[in-house]
Image 1 (spheres, protein in one colour):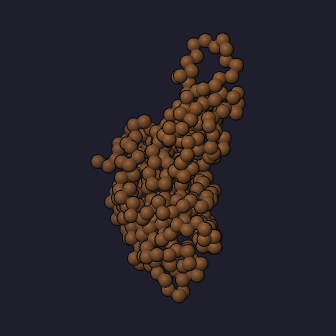
Image 2: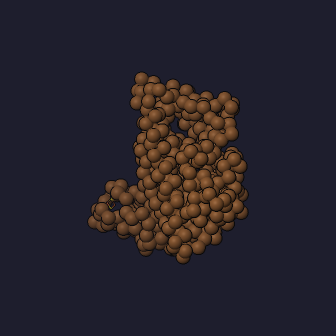
Image 3: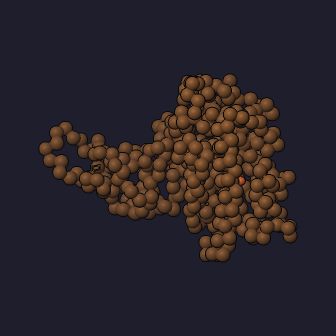
Length: 376
Ligand code: FES
Ligand SMILES: [Fe+2]
């Protein structure tokens, strides 16, 4: 890490320009821990973050726990059917009140000293607290967090000033509606940890299919690469490709990637939906450190009883993910090299990355008081 330059100087290295003239964000943004900390506050602490599936919190008492911008969070369905979110932090001495990733309870019992909270967050039972003066039980419930749902996903936002979820998602809402996600059922989750910055993974996703013929031979055999389209709309990028059914297609890939078109949606900053006829996966990209990232894949299928199809489909995804992981980790090593500062972008392919970099730069600079979005 180059600590001789200030964060302001590092941010000033990127200036938004039209795509034809654009560079990527500089390498230091992928390697400097100060940038990662700024992102935690300005990006993950201010945007809507997908934290659970609606099927996990469908019934009263069902909850899911998550980490958002380093904060422990839980979402829970109340007895009154209202979905609420709280900081998963006991008001006594700060331990997590819910320890499992998900479950169903009638109340939360803190594992440390046994305080209990209702599903509405209210502090109910307090052990051995007789004689404590000036303690207001009503003011010591779990601290609430903003929560909202869209399609199959539960989102929270740590920023009380942020726009509502649907406003944040903007055009994505109408773009996804015709795909009928309600016809799909969650089947399996897989998590992949990569030795790279989270933005390397997002960049790789947003390169408009540029890497597909070179890196993903199996996938390439089912996509009509030359007709691959990239469209930016609001805070989302929609990539789409017609599918082909030629005899030289990779057999397993072809068998599990069906229909006329594939759609790949990215919503700033870190959520993706990959949709084929009858099958979908979502990707949630979460930074663990400046050079470490976990990507959570949730797989959904229209026919969850077709085990062979599901196994093959997930195996295809696994293979693609292994190819992407190797490339992303190689990129991260290159970003640390003195030989690299920033790269240019393909106008034909890399408009999504351009949007990502501009949105990110705007959020980081706004946090430091360097101007907002859109750039003047
Ligand atoms: S920390 Fe929860 S009861 Fe003490
Ligand atoms: Fe890829």
